Length: 170
Image (cartoon, rainbow, N blue to C red; front, side):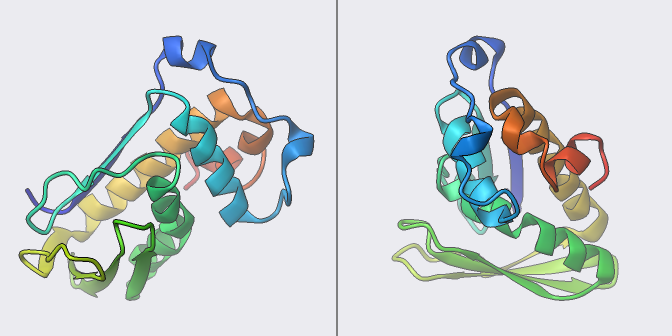
């Protein structure tokens, strides 16, 4: 299966068991990276799921709490690069994942190169994705993630960019 990713938010039953993060608990309300990490950590306590795969492996077995946060941290840069037609590199640094994805625009498509820093070897090393489809996956992820954050961590969801994403302005 070609490169893909998707997010499924928590079920109502899982939401009932989650303790929201109080606003005073946040280290820095303007540090997007910390906010993404904390939000993913709260979602880890639910049945939310992040699926990502490609390069010969359909499921990279990302957990929501840490592996997904590495991707979400880079999401604004990826969206901006796709919209402006610039190349961008995402470092998926989580232990056990340890790979770099380079997104290179090529007309109406994007060449995605995967370099592994672990024992896993991507086959193939380069995949091609329709630029519009890839941007659509990114926008859906941002919107769905912000909606889930709103349910589990309203103090974070009120901050940018999550508030904007939840309203559909990605």
